[in-house]
Each structure stands twice: as structure tokens, then as C-alpha cells.
Length: 308
Image (cartoon, rainbow, N blue to C red; front, side):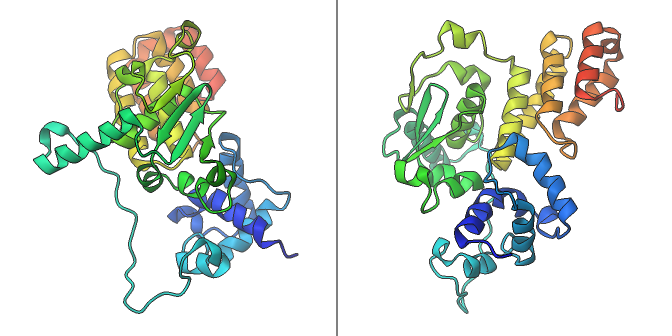
């Protein structure tokens, strides 16, 4: 059965962040494709189709997820020039950067200062990211290179491109706020969650009702980690993991750790061991936690009994 180019194109753009990964791009069996779809579909809002598995299989066999040239042959409207040039070199996506301002040279400090100014002012913004009652005026030139999801969302022909708004209605507003902060600072600090830069429009500006819903720092790190995985922001995911590790060492004896352990297991797939290994290690290092009734409840709820 053949499928329309429009449907194939939507599926390619939507699922590219998942199937362009090296360990996924070589999959051909329908059962394996189905497993990946089952893992990621509940945590995302990727384009769905009754024959999604067959279409994904066809795209994988056509190497469109692993080769931009093959993708350009299949969807020429997404690329300026589908034919490779003799002198054209392959340019890989730059590695995510992490800056410590006190270790930077003067030009880098000036660059970071300019990025912070754009973050706080929202000047020259060409995209709005919304989540709940929050609106963030951001810049495609900064956001898109850090996330394949936003590259796809800003692609030609999408509603987001026409309206200039990407809505994230099902994500945690606090985690999204930290994600926006990371785009401009290459780090985040949970203390900055109370900052409200001019690039945002938040109807309540941390009203009491919102504040009561704010997660603990440990839970917030776990939510940010899952958000970074969802939108394929590698640097943010690595940073959130390091923050989660540090917070677990300091706050393992607080109720927030059990909440974070639960969050780590319900928000990530089994193969993603980042947060899960930190949780298991912490339980092993502090076995007294296993004597708490609350711990047993969390272990049963999240399916950790077999690994702790």
C-alpha cells in the first residue's frame, strides 16, 4: 500500500528525533519498531497514523532517518538542494556546550552576556513557546540548533511556522521554564525559577496556586531530564542528570527523594538508565530508606522492587 507524501513527511519530521539515533536508525523489524513507538508515544505527541508502523518501516528501509541525502530525495521540499555537491563536506551537529563564566575568555564572556540580554529582553524574538499560562519569546537561531523537535516544529508548512507559536500544553511549566533558561545560559539553577524576564508573559507570575504545585528540586531535575529526552536536548539532559546526582547526595533523607525516585521511573523508559541508576545507587548506599513504609509504596508503584 502506498501512502501520501504529506503523511510520510509528517511522520518523518515528527519521529526523526527518535529514529535518527544510531541504535534506532538500523531497525527494520516491525516488532522492534512497535516497541520503540510504545516506549515514546505515551510521553510525546508525535504524529500518529493507523499504519504508522508500516510507514516507519518503509522510511527506515529508505534510510531517510540516517541520511540527509536520502531524506532530500524523499522530501525535496524540506531541503534547499537534494543533490550533493562534489566539494560539499558533511557537517555534523555541534556538541552541546557548557560554559562557566569565570573560566571563559573575554570574547566568550561578551557572547554569554549578549545571550543573557536576549533572554531577559526577548528583543528580536521570532518564536513564542507557550506552556500553561506562560509565554516565552525566544529565538529560532538559538533554540533550533539545540533541539531536533523545534527544528521540525518550525519546518515549512506547519501551523507553528505560520503562527510563530509552539505550544507545549502537556509539559510541566516549571521544567519548561528551566528549559528556556538553559537555551540561553547552557545551564540552569532552580533558584532562577522565581525570575520572570521580560521575554516571558506569565499571567500569574508564580501565584500562590502555582507555587503550591512547584515540585521539589530533586523532582524538578527529574522532570527536566525527561523533558530534555522528549525534545532531544542532549546538553540539557546531561546537565539535569548531574544536578539530580548532586541533589540526591545532599537530600536523600528528605521526602523529596522518594517523590523524585517515583518521577524518575514513571517518566523514563526502561532502557534509559541515567536517573534510574542514581536512584538504585542511592537506595543501596542508604539501606535504611528501605525500612520506611513510604519507600515500599514507591518501590511497588514504580516497579523497582526487582532492582533494589
